[in-house]
Amino acid sequence: MVKQGVVPDDLTRPFFEAANEGRLVVQALKGSERLYFPPRSASELGCSPDDLEWREVSGRGKIYNYCVVYDCPVASLKEDIPFNLAVIMLDEDPGILMYSHLPGTAPDEVPVGASVRVIFEATANGQKVPEWEIVS
Image (cartoon, rainbow, N blue to C red; front, top):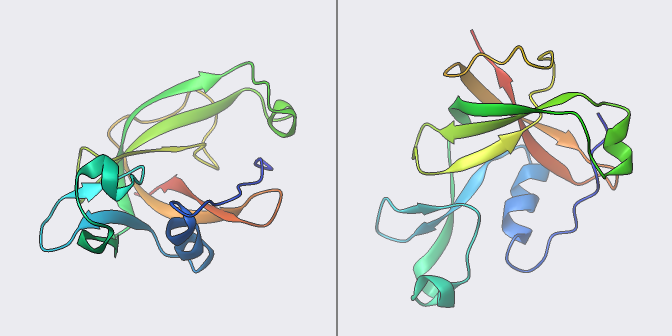
């Protein structure tokens, strides 16, 4: 599945640079266990930019839920319809949810609750993005 290209902005650049290196990172409040995804500005979180850091996580999680996409306005995804869109809950913080197409999993054959690990796939413009695959 060729994914639509991603163009990082100032807020998301560290996330996507790490993805290009094969690492999964999320925003964190320094000196705490509090993690944030999607990333937020320091002003939105009521702190100083110096209070935030990007923390590498294990890249492991569980499938929380999913749906099957039967119609999509993105031209590059139309040839892959139907496809899964899964919600992944990170092991480090069940409040952090990420989305994945679950490469290699047939539509509507998603085992909710299954363990997954992150993989990185290139988009149409070469930017890598995290996707997830089921592990046994």
